[in-house]
Image 1 (cartoon, one colour):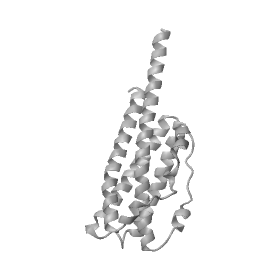
Image 2 (cartoon, rainbow, N blue to C red):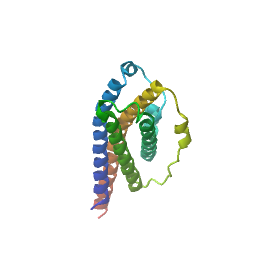
Image 3 (cartoon, rainbow, N blue to C red):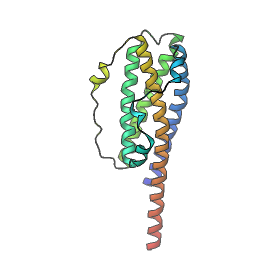
Image 4 (cartoon, rainbow, N blue to C red):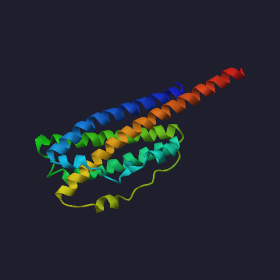
Length: 193
């Protein structure tokens, strides 16, 4: 199979994964807000997090930098989801027959699979840069009361939603750019013959 076709197919599969995560996440976030009575939080904007980079800075980044930022973000979000499950697993998520708990586990599995696919995509575009291992102790140092844990879980879900939308845009752009490169190379080969 042609490498460009494989690349386009991989991008399409990752975009589908992202759409599924986004759809599942919308329902899960709604359940999470309802279960933890965090309705007032949805009115506030939260600064910080990996998704806080402004669009001008993002637009100036090369595609490889964006892909690396996506991989790094999902690695961080995966760790933070694990933390939410550890913090809230026993006491906060057992209501509603554990549906919220199993929903978070499902999202975690999807994010793990997505990160792996993004890493594979990175290798197909020649991404060489090593991922910087984040200090897990930094995640472990975060503590707080029950309310802070609930809010932290909401922040993780919200940020994951932002990254899902951003990643879909990035992958569509990558797919178009690679497709245009392939068409350009094919045209120049045809003209030189």
